[in-house]
Image (cartoon, rainbow, N blue to C red; front, side):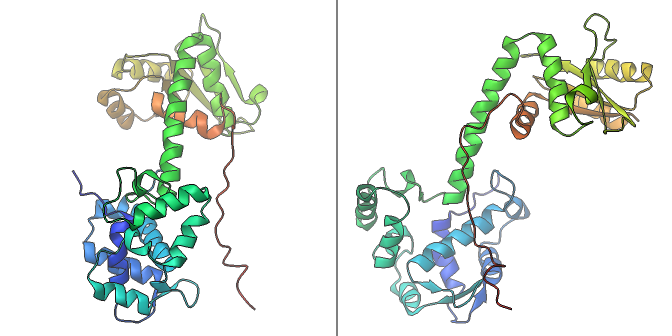
Length: 321
């Protein structure tokens, strides 16, 4: 089991120590020094936030820097450059643990908390908790500024949790409806993913009584230069094994087809995965978890309840000619 990556708060003293020589460093150089200090493994360096768009370590180093800047321990004389301040040097010399509790003594950091969107009462309670020697059980870790997770991580974890719950709901709905509906859903999903164009011209389900092992046919492109054949199996606890995938490959052969997608609401056996890796035909296997994730990503069977926009600095705007 890989070692846990330190939280952004635990990284604060290391980030500050990386600047202890008083020389300005690019944030990238701070990141490199932090990584060298912890000697992170390749697996830790490769770990990403739930969105997959940023590494966990880069995110936490960045947020540790942000909090230290807000408290006045680091300054940024220009974009992307970090420099320790006299307050930061004093913090290192004090021998005290540098974390949110330490930062909460500074007015700039208090103001940062009071303008984060919490009510004033919540902010005051949080600051009082931060400044106590023995914080209560519902301290910072229970707020949007948790000790173990950065605000970005908490947003992404919350979204991941919401999507997982939605995925479970989607699969339950699929089981509540007919197999024929599921076959049409599969075609709708392929069209939503960009295959062929509109639903009318791109995809179709086959006739229920004589599908010959094929549940749907979809054009790979708008011109219909090639077709993708679909098989959809609505199982709850039955794993799709090699025999079923082999039968699907045989059905593709009968139709002189080269490409197929086998979709199930359950999962596939190891032998099934190994089989599709050995044959000449291209067969993609989509299990229940991936099916639900694709439905959410491409808007099939779901609707947008709320849109949250997270904005970042536009560096191009602040560039002088």
